[in-house]
Length: 243
Image 1 (tube, rainbow, N blue to C red):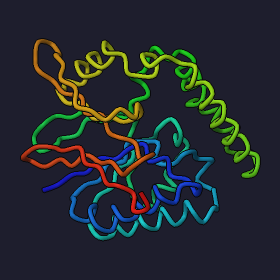
Image 2: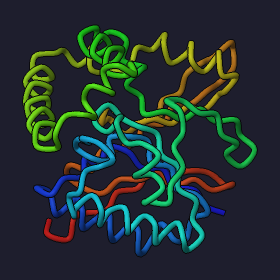
Image 3: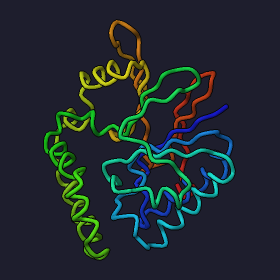
């Protein structure tokens, strides 16, 4: 029995090394698993399920092939691809999950999420997040022409990178009290998330009990995934073939 978790691939046509590594993962590793969880920021940006770009359609076809082979795929939206909806999910053979989800991971009650909601000290982002998840904001964006949405996405990426460069490391990381809070509310002692690009295993206490927070790695410099079996877990890396 085997489950994989990935996040923060930031797939884009400009990074063929990431795409090639991911497609290799789908061919060689993912088919061994019963379940694959994608915990957000799968794409660098997402402008809508009506995007006719061959790149995103090819990624969907590759995921659908994995799904058809018997591996269940679940997806949680990230801060870059929160507009991914049921239409694209169906093409990719994956099931959309809410922002946070409790799963039974080989008998262990586990909380999974993208992780951006844990960064409560980033007030600027949290304000944008709240607005961008409203029906009226998303409805307005989705009726714009694809070309306009692409320009908006490009501008947002530039502003986001500029903003991140001026923020302290603490602001960009999770708020420890928020981690304890969500685990306590969920009745869980294991949290798996991405978003921060700081892969690690953190030990903490929740209501007097030992708990763990597993942070997934990003794919900027190498492939990264969490392998989980009934016997334990391991954060794995895979070098790009052109490295």
